[in-house]
Image 1 (cartoon, helix red, strand yellow):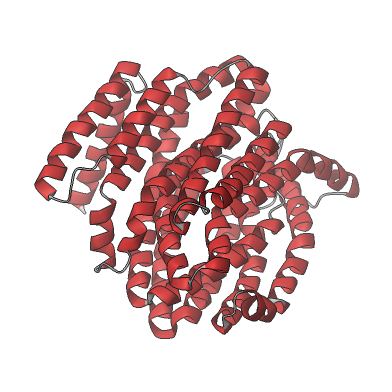
Image 2: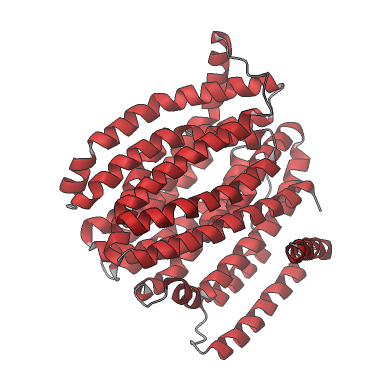
Length: 491
């Protein structure tokens, strides 16, 4: 098994722990808040997130790419300072604009005074978040994956400790007090982790250094910036569009299903944290080995994304019932299938972007695919809303946008780099996963469990038939799970 896969597994475990804690946090908050209050929280997050994306400038991925190929440790700090200087030229004006526009956005646009303080607090969060992803780039770009993955799990514990009591005592505003405090702790911790190993090697960039680094960073970062804006508008398109036409309670149902579906990004986020620095280095030095490594790895990643997503959708009614503790979000359940596979498509888009498009600097195709992601979604929504129920129209519109963007990426990559990452076995496995997620087996637990075992066996048989996983890979995962169980029992 390659070191790339091993680090991806460690990353997956780390993010899995963080996600599990995040789910506990989210569902406790959902129990505390009313449906209407949760809708306001999600709307404020959507507004702040839609503004916040403009500060990124694509510098996180661009910095990771440059740091991973830096010739010396002194160059790393120069890249960091250059990136931060560029980012805060945008972040400070953006945060100020959001802060002073809070009253107008809350009262004029969305007719709800409860949004004023959350939006103002989000403006402060933007200032703290400005440096986080660049610090993250220093850690991942220098391939200190162990520290990064420990941080991801540990900071999730901090999040639970902050959010639950703040929301319990202060409600909607408490959520955003905790959000501010959490980002302050995150920024300070990342700064310590990033620069402790570089003590004594923190050299300021000269004027000529700054100009050269600025050119190198912006050559790819502006394109990444554009696609991050397009992705954020795609992700937030549901709450933002629906919030203009329907009640906050209905927005909350959609936001709940969206939140559940976004958890399927766990696998791709785990992969991209490792793939971007590793494959950027590989593409620059050995294109043939780059293609072979990507294709072998993509089959495994594709399989895991489908499996995790299909299982999560199949058992969604039971998971939601346990976590929410009531039926108040049952209206969201039919939306989980289309939104779930919308994020399956986006998870694959994310993997291809970080593994191929950014290392190969396929800027034009990257921009076109993300423009299609958003454009197809918005177009499909306005067409679908004329004959379908509003929430369903939005959910299936996001699914259509994800499919269109991934299909374009597959065609463009095949033409430019002369290799295909999607073939007939991928389509067969994808249809099987969709059938598992969608098949109506009723609510009887015994019948559903039996059906699940049969369907899962079919899926696993197809994996082995297509050789997406080798026996050695499975044995490695089993050995790691046994090792973790042994440590838990000793503890």
